[in-house]
Image (cartoon, rainbow, N blue to C red; front, side):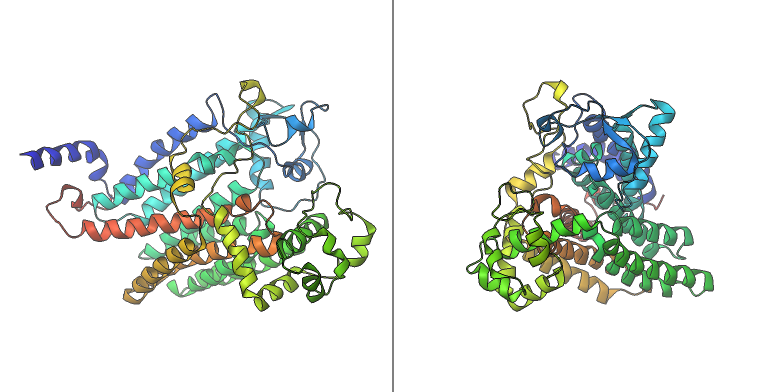
Length: 500
């Protein structure tokens, strides 16, 4: 009797969802995703992210400025989220990023519905929120299964992990992270859809390459990701034999490769100088046993060792970061390729840096940036606790250690390889390869910040790694649920459902 009562209770709770197939679950997830997004991003106290100094490059490009020209440094940076900006003429900041597209779209929507003079950043958050809802709906639809338990777990994990404020607080900001986050989810959604369609759809192929291009072009550190997505794109060529399909698949892959190279080539020189400085002095030389020897190996003057452990924004350094001395002795004398070669020759040093990265690897949100407007009267730098169950649990409960990252990767790729070997159709193989691509993107996003920017702001620079790592954890849990659901046919949540 007691077991029967538990069974009835479970069915009563999950009944509306448990009887739905992938398409129904995708429709159900829309209002569930929207609820936390509305709660976090739109309702007071509104949650956003304070500027760490990165906003200016996009503001100068799209035509945004501060409402108060006399705003203090303290009010601008780190402590308070700024919701409104003054609209100015279209700028000439020279910043190249696909982030420009959603920001300009938000500005246009703002002018149409709100004001021609003041930009409320919630219009940008609304666009990002809509894209997140679409992405998660497509993932649920493309990844749904034949068991109620699996579909429920898929919907629950999608919302719990990816609607968490650790990710969505970025929506009310001018950082590039939301474009990376959303374009990765959309790329994965379109890839899974293509792999599982009986006759792959051309619009889904176009959607894959469009999302992949947005991901590649969002930030300079995403440039290597475009190469991985281009290789996956080549795998779509064989799914159909018609010329139009193959032309789009080959052309899209070539465009991604070109975009990857162009993203680095078009990066502002000032940004390249900052990254190179931090790569060497706040990366290779930070905690180095012999900075002078390391500099000599990099082909640099050993007297630059006085800058070891400093970053580009460290005040009162022995040699100022913009000094002509550095133009003569440093900038142009080394490169990220030489740094990568240095780490290849000294794997123990690279492992030390990856251990440092792993200590920041389970933290999604930057806790040194405030989440509230100054007008809300919260303390300077206050961090919101709205809808942050996953990000807090991950930060406090999962091991912040390289061994844990490597263990998850080993388990993940062993399952992916198993499923790839068992695949019966080209689509099933591409399905497994899509998950492998997520893992590779995460690995690249774990290593590149160390080689490309040293230990500077590691937690924030590991953002894309966190997205991939969470997707890997979620897919592992779902793989287990799917296998368990297929075992006890009398278990209420193991009930098979129709595709609709």
